[in-house]
Image (cartoon, rainbow, N blue to C red; front, side, top):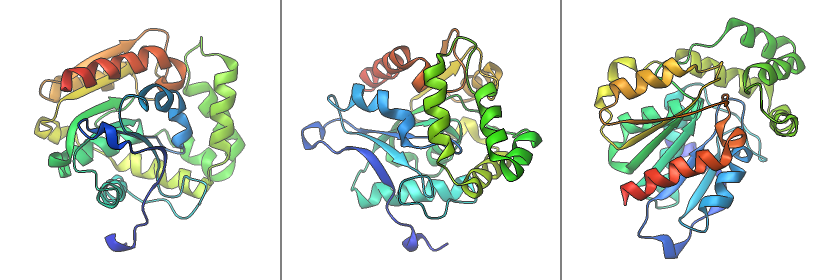
Length: 255
C-alpha cells in the first residue's frame, strides 16, 4: 500500500499544548486489541503530559482494513506522528504493540525519546491453535484468550471487559495481526536499539513468558526490567497502578 493512502490513526486522549516541553506518550495495543486497553493509563497520564492511545488500522470504531505486517503498522504510526506534528515521542507497546515499537525504534530512532516494551519479545511465535480457532471458531478463540492472557488472580470483571472488547474486532484483522506477529523476529538487531528502554513483564505471562523480557533486557543496551508478581499478559488492566508507577518513574528519569 502506498504510504500516502494511509489514513491518520484514530486515538483516544488529546494533545496538550501546555505539555509541549515533554515528549508525548503514545500507547500501542496488541493483536486483536484496541485503545480501550489503555483507559487506566489515559486517566493517569493525561493530566501530566500529552498521552494518546492509538487504535491501529482496522481496530477502531471506523473499521477498515488492518495491516499484514509489523512493518506496515510501523509506517502507519509514522504517518500519524507526521500528521499530528509530533517530532519525538515515548512509544509504549504491549505484545504486538511492543513488536511495532521495537521495529519503530530500529527504523526511526530519531523520532523516539524513550521506549516501553510490555509483555512482548524480539520474536513472537504464535501457537497454531490460535490460528485455527480465530479462523474457524471466534468464540473459541476468545475462550483461549481468557485462559492464556491473565494470571490466576485476575478479577473476573477485568477479564470480561477485555474479552467483550476483543469480541468487537473483525476475525480477519485479528488473524492478520497474529500472522504479522508470527513473522516478526528482530533478535539479531536488538543491540541497534539505542533509545532509553523500559521492559515490563508479568511473572505469570503465558503468551510471552518472562524469558522473553529477559532476552530483551540482555540484548538492548541499557534496558531496565520491571517484573510484576501475580500478573499475566495484560499488565495495563491487571496491574494498572504498579504498571503506571513503573512508567512514571521511567518518564521522570528521561526528564
